[in-house]
Image 1 (cartoon, protein in one colour):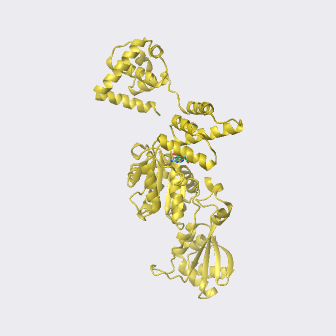
Image 2 (cartoon, rainbow, N blue to C red):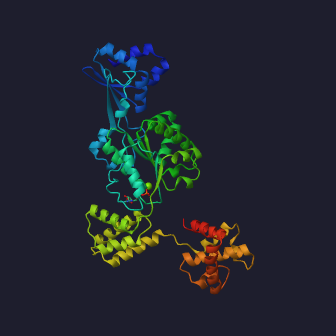
Image 3 (cartoon, rainbow, N blue to C red):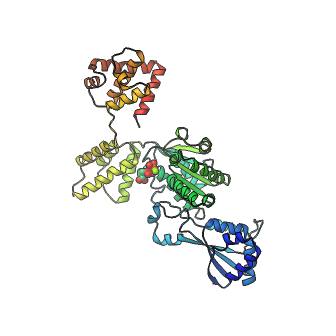
Length: 468
Ligand code: ADP
Ligand code: MG
């Protein structure tokens, strides 16, 4: 049957078009009046539907009569949505279902809103593996002051994807504060509420890689088309795009297309748009169209409830005072908090030790030590002298020139503030001064920074540079 159809089609279209669009098709099966054909990609299917639906219908009707039906099977193995990190977490029963997806397109489906009854918006039924991790749900994303705005914006977006002014929704914040988790939670919730919507989670890094591959294989258009049919696009860690102008360019086009069509875009980044570097201005301005919501360091109460939730889900009991001890001492981010509690549980079960405050202290200390970068006095001198465009020798020299004295005093002030070194030791390391000089420097900096605006700015700038 299919061969006869092909003969007919071949006679009626350009040879090049025939070669491109019909030769790759594989006839799979014929049951009653339905012919199943396999096409290489969703884009391919879309193209056929758009350009060749008439000739397909005519040729098939000739073979199978008025009730002819065509079923597309889209080969998904090598398309862009597959082979991504969370596949292994999807139960195998679902996984198989997602491999290839039948799109049943009856020719007689005359939907009234369609201008051309044969162009069926069947593409909407095609499933793309979402790459979402179901464990990263809203339920598991504990609320606190630090994340309330971002979390509720996420919920609003999940309730009406593309239908709020939060488009794009940009979630930003430091490492381990829950950006990836929240981004997934939105996707998971949308999938729950709107199973028919195509949701895709992808890291900016993977997106970039796919794009580079697509360009290499001359598939740039396929790549763009693939992304343009997605309803909810989630791109994680967009700061990764900085400096990659080709990828930024293609993302700009995809973004515009999705936005214009009321599709939802969700982005995460480690910085606010204003602080992003090497991202094209036009892209940055798009990021600002919607809402940028920050995830901040969780406060003590939130840290406690995150810990309790984690323990509860793992079925582990732990004394209240230990939980509070961990929450009190690990403040930097949630990932570390979880890490500490996991190693605490592991320690106690390996060594069959009861979890005591002492054990907790040892582990927490290790954690804090390993993760906090020590700021050395050398490092402080380097940063301060760089800031004032001088070298460290000048900073240490005996000169009384005002700006050099100020730089030296600032270095002393920060050494006192950020290290455990004594005044004497700071003095000896910063140009062999005595402890009284260091003390005087600290007082001077304190005074000047409350009276002199310019000086205050020096202190703030250097604080920022030192706290990376
Ligand atoms: P980021 O992407 O910002 O670096 P992640 O989303 O990977 O951070 O979060 C790090 C870990 O902390 C994850 O295991 C995540 O589940 C957990 N986490 C972060 N925020 C919360 C929260 N509010 N409630 C529960 N777990 C959280
Ligand atoms: Mg992340």
